[in-house]
Image 1 (cartoon, rainbow, N blue to C red):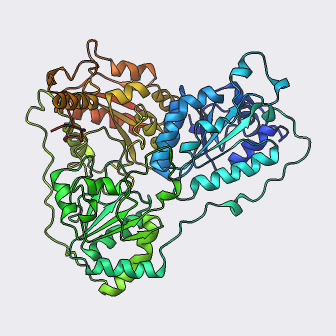
Image 2 (spheres, one colour):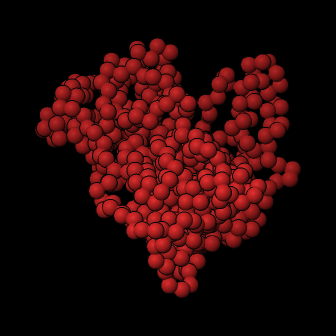
Image 3 (cartoon, helix red, strand yellow):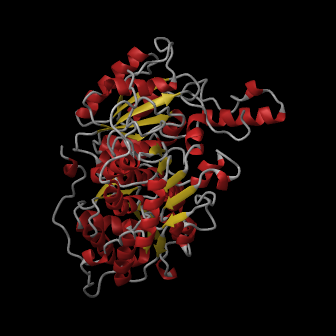
Length: 593
């Protein structure tokens, strides 16, 4: 069965005759391929329009079992494609379910068009009880602090304008979700005259501004005079051309590069200039690299001041010159602290990182004569990945990464998600789609949906999408797998199952140490054990194939090989990898030694 044949409507497509048809038509004209939803009566008009007016094509509906998955699937799709999916959330109650996913997408700076609905604004149109509790005045207030823009149209022409603006703003850097709330009463009004829909190409997203000529000259001078520059590479474009420019930029400057495991793959991690594994928590090695820099360049690096703070409480003394390239301040508000600490900066550039590099690279090329300061040869020595000493008896968290590195071969893997404590020193990123970053806002339960969304975006490309998930994250988001099974979206889910909410064990240990109390009690109220949750059964209940838990390196390799075969055949698969309680690298925890 082809993807398009799933949930294909019967009969002929209806003509545009209802206000909700206008909203559906706008989705089509905006080029949106999919809309994720969990059904609700507040947008039953739009639902009918998607089916009987559009024929469930462009966009095609993706039925989800929870609004959390509606958002996480759209989020994962955007991370893998840099394209916008649409979401539909039912009234105030569905919106409140989805708020965490919206916050994740906001913190991750991804585009997303969210269509909501409220009960009939007109009193006379409300059904007793249900339409009253599902009608909210200014529903956008629930999410206004962590969306880029919201609207509640009052007419069919207003829907056209609102959706044009929402799409334009969501896709304009820095990207973020936008929200359009459709009055259910308005949706069900018959059109009395033709609605003019303009050429949507004339409402394209705006391009990011670039550095001024003076800023480029100053940046070039600082960097070429620098003896020990360090580039903090954060967010960036998915294209291979941008990837190549970033590599060339670092090589010309002879600059060491640091990346973050919280952000998407941005630089080849096996390159000799990539100075340390992608950062989850700053190791002594990373702190030493930052401390030794005379010039530090933040390239859309979200937490520049936090990076400096881990080197010295006097952040202004960390290095001679700091260049910060970001547009993130255009989204900052007083509600969410995702703007992080205010860093000391000598040259601030209002631009995206890749726009800036594209501007500066020709200047650096000209001034260096195209001769890179970094000389090829020598550099990193890659060793064959090795399992932990006890992997034939019990897996350690890092062994999952080792197994993937060993079995990678000629496969093109895309890691849609990795758990906390991922080591990052074995599985190297060679391509911008090798790794898609974290969930943005730390909202537990997003990992399964992110994986499904990424697999949807990369379906048919030959890339194998893997979600490496913690057990807590998976259990909270397990029903997202039903959508993968129903729509035959191939993805491999590997659960690094330590049977604990281990991040909070670390916090409880920190508090016990600060208070001089018993550290060994840290597990109480944290362990997911006695009984163990049957993760394989959870997957099978959603229609996703799985075998049995594995606990040794040999079992893990055999299960991954089996799972890759299933995924290559177009179906999802889940592996429960039972690992020792712990992390592959030490976490940052307030008060911990």
